[in-house]
Length: 87
Image 1: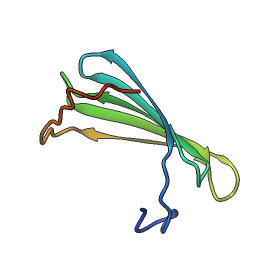
Image 2 (image 1 turned 90 degrees about the horizontal axis):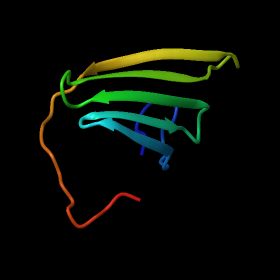
Image 3 (image 1 turned 90 degrees about the vertical axis):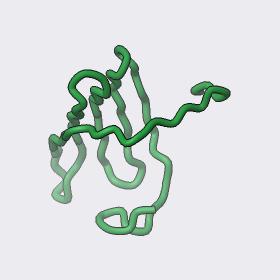
């Protein structure tokens, strides 16, 4: 449930895709249902412990918009589900 911002009060499940390129190196993509935006994240959970991202979508004026993001990753723990396989 979104508590603040453009999607306040909305709660949904977005379409997403994940590719594993190597141990600790993942490309995660998702598309929003409510607002016209998609995102592509590259997560380096192994060597660099960094993430970089691009958001693409339509802004309030109806024009294409492109924004970048990224940051450092600080692992706080890990969860394993040995009896469950990804779909």
